[in-house]
Length: 378
Image 1 (cartoon, rainbow, N blue to C red):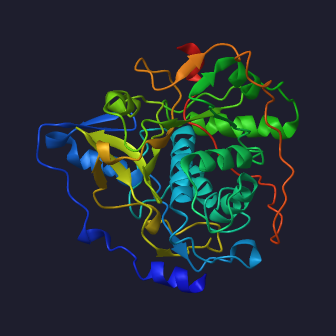
Image 2: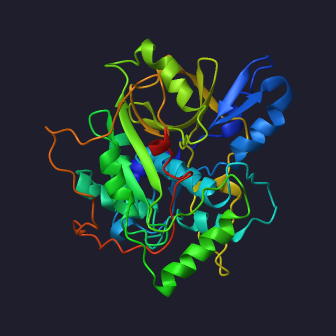
């Protein structure tokens, strides 16, 4: 294992060698529900992209499970993309879609709390350790590459341990989103304990800072809707291109997970028929929490122009993270649970087992979604 990791670590990418600048055209770029005109808004566009949390391969973190790998280079790219998508949801929830990160500028506590969820430590709720170990229950050995659907299922399970946000993660089946089932997942009787009241007040305090942040509703869990799709057999079918691009125009969009076989990317927008994505295939040294609980965040933001790829080069297996129905249908939206399906049972906190490693600890930290359950109002 160590020799394999060393091989990959020696292939660490120097970003400046291959990242392309955006062309000087009159075209428009869409980034997660925001439109930018290249000739007049390029600086705003780059600022928006650099504000997204960028998770890449890391090395020299504590061995996963105590005896497992200490680097995810070569196998963890889809897990890193899942982290990026989830982090974007948290930023929209707590800081608002219009929040921007600036280098060396003091950031709000909510930002640092979000970032701490993804540090490569076993006690961070969405760390590479937690995701890799939870993947064992999905049939994936630690150190094995994940596909987009597997990452979606892992996030769905980890969210059950997240007591702060109490997020409902719905992963669609057979390209079908069932509103009846989502209602069952999202609704929970309001609690009146002082702990819950305190949590609600802290949410409201954070939300009041930005008008674009969702309103917290007691008794109603925020929803993260993930739709695994196959948009072709060996290649993406051209009939889906326009519908796929429309997803990035929706303000509720959290992007898409996909890429090429064994190479995962986090897609955040498009320019013409080119997809714009953040690439996790760069190995950086592990960054730990500082004594004051803060994180040196310079390596968690991509501060150069992002990658682009032709949309037809995309692998047809993708996972969309959206909260709103679209008119161009890549999936079905139905009101009632199909009669021929097994009964829907809202997921409960699973019994966690390990294979010679340590038990995944219950998480008490963070995680959430961008807007209130807007799919129901469409």
